[in-house]
Image (cartoon, rainbow, N blue to C red):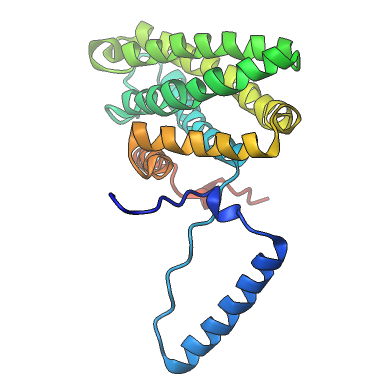
Amino acid sequence: MPGTVAVTRRTLLIGSAAAGAAGATLALISSALGAEAGATPAAPAEIPVSTAEDLMREHGVLRRVLFVYDEAASRIEASGEKLPMVPPGVLKQAAMLVRQFVENYHEKLEEQYLFPRFEKAGLLADLVKTLRLQHDAGHRATSQVLTLGEGGAFQDAASRRRLAAALRAFNRMYRPHAAREDTVLFPAMRRIFTPKEYDELGDTFEDAEHRVFGKDGFEWAVAEVNGLEKAMGLADLAQFTPTA
């Protein structure tokens, strides 16, 4: 809004350790006084999210889609010539979430801001080359899912078998892909970005999220995958707890 000072999750990190400790003490005192007076407590401040955490939680959305893909592939494979118990539109919606949130947003950020810096620094160049190739392969697999996962194609048993194969191939690639980024690439970011650059990169990512999805892009993606899990009967996490 005009005249409003923008406060990002990174700017919340600014301040010395002494100032942070003093602020925490004042907050405790204010909370205690407010409780005594029966006052309504103030809403908590926005919790800052680091650059790597931002990327990793987006991988969490992807991993939940992979779970939906796994279940859909299993039902297709078990159904034989019969129509599988996969609600209409679920796979198209899941693939569109992958396209919009993973491929056209998350991966574009990696390709624009991370991969070139690693290549320029000569660090993890072979890994980055493979990650780029896998982004392209994932995009092709998503196109297959969109084509085979709806309408007349889904009614055809042979097309469904190709769909199940595409889902399995996508998952087989993206599980190690995301895990390698989380455990190798993202931790190495601090070796090629200064602390200031690292924090500014987080602001850049946040600005991109707002441009593409509005204020709550991550929350939107989580809500989308929640809906997919409910449609597939996968929402209750407790059902997956071993009983023996």
